[in-house]
Length: 391
Image (cartoon, rainbow, N blue to C red):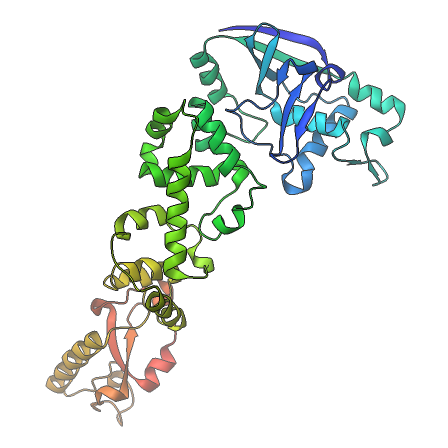
């Protein structure tokens, strides 16, 4: 791959014909139409996050004559370029020059570009960018892109996959799942965690339809040049609607569960949604259930795997088994069947308590990681169980 360093390209030239798509949140074109600022393999514009502090920092650096780092262009054809690295900075510059945001001056007052004095305006417009123009094959360009550290914000896995498999499929998928203004995001966010701009929603949709994290690359490669994302969109919507139909109004703990995996495992089963929703409310109200996120898979699986609930209270059968064992051993030794009473005052040292006079206790405290199983269970008289607490 050949590279050429350009040292005389100014902000004035880059901002000529600058277009920013407010709906999709990305810079489109600049440099008089010669530059594509956000190719399909690029991430969305992120410098708006955190109240736009990063985009303001770019402008502040320029006004102070600080370098803003190397920028890389890919020469796609004669006199046509794509931003390989630097689209966040270029979009910040273009947005400021075209009046999309303001910075604060030394007095703390907000100033748009047109509100700056003439000297400051010219300083920004005449600011020279350091640009490497790269010219190579698609695979060389993509490999370079994957290794570049972009302004301190490393590419995540899905952003790298988008770059590797760029094409009409990725473009359409991003326009749906990575569009922060998509009205469906509010519904999706009840079931899926993440930031649309960082490709988290798209990544989840791909994990679901590809049946696993390890299969995403293959799926994207297979569909790379397709002009439809119907399968991806339909499968994602089907999973969301399945969860919504079964469990009704979403609860906070439903967000980020592996709904795609649960759908594949259980969607062929028949369920009564009204009964499921009633059981969810009952289990949420049960103080013994400490892992509310496990409730949904527990119910889908027929209430067989109590480990999903991280139960704090011992089952009745466990308590009766431990009570019988302790009582038999205590009678043989002539001591109380409460281990604490057996070490205490002579008035209770040999007392045998009835089952309903005792409580099950975690030998190793549950709050400190003690398991709720028979190996960690002992029966104490109610007085000593209250006294023990979390000791």
